[in-house]
Length: 254
Length: 252
Image 1: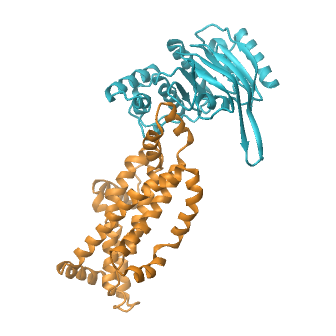
Image 2 (image 1 turned 120 degrees about the horizontal axis):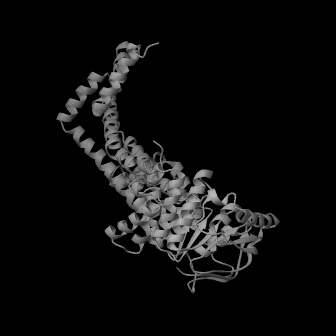
Image 3 (image 1 turned 180 degrees about the vertical axis):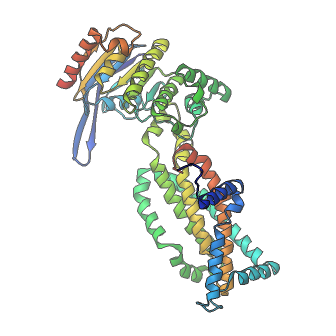
């Protein structure tokens, strides 16, 4: 068989691969076309009543009106603030605590079971109590952020710290590093891929935790908006950091 | 380069699972002259790695003393460079920055420590790999970096813990020849731990056989230098010495 006999399907696929390499942003939208088509088809088929399952058009219309009356921008701002607060808390409290528990055998023995226990409960279980104690205000929100982001960051930081081989500590010490330098030069970079994973998980939970009730159209719109926001944070912020660190160093396989 | 003296060293530790004290080093006294190359061989469990960890300061002795250039060892320090079997390169640093790590800890300015690192990399023929990350290199290349990183810090004593055990046989021979060449140039004091009798004899001026945490034999290796495998592999003197060391290791 000659090399020229490439099937038309394969040719088309090749053209698509070349195009998506040139247009990565556009190409990342293409997989959503069948999702939209399927959604519209299910709506059209009438399996579910229209009130319970609005179509893409209604959601886009709703997007327009909620943008115009300022509700959606405020909602987006809320979400971004939540993400920023979650990141700040995760980094400021989660990493130091994770380093302590990861490095000290005593702290590990005492704190690790407790951390696992409270992580397993999950913030949803706390929410009714929190609403009774603090109402739906800033305190409750801070609690939820701390709870949701902190645990994944702490637990993953601990795992990261403990994954750094003993030889790397020893190598640094016998090259003249102080304990403090070992923390900065060896432990932190060694744990970084895990810390990123923890932050990613925590922020992910946090975002989708905060869906609001409303009409079905609004809920669907909220899902779409949060999905897009998360996609942007993930692919424009988190993924590039991971590519430049753990993947580059060979600590994480691509 | 400074000398190393070990005086009635003992190391026992508590094994919580066996619920008893285990003796790793029974009683070792040893003196390594400045600029000497000493191999330590013995079967697994003879205490050779414990000995290295004690000299490096990674473990504290139960009794006895270790001195480098007259100063008592108390924890790890840059006067004793260590080359690890697992290479132990920092994956997040380039080859250049791995080698420059020791000088950086001493507070050497960036331009100067990179200059030092480049000089040492050139010594091992690694100049072209300076900007690469360790995971992009073969095992043999990684261990060359490991050796160069330890040397670039100019330690009084170089401690090597089965450094070539995890590279393939051909690369190992090349690395052994390179090590003898670099040692001849720099005259570092080297303590080389291995379980490979031929390697011990090929590299050293002196081979120490350990058995059950004590020195069983101390054999002078008076083979001429420079040493190359092509010449030594059929050399009667080399064969006789290797046979003698092997006999002792098997008796150990």
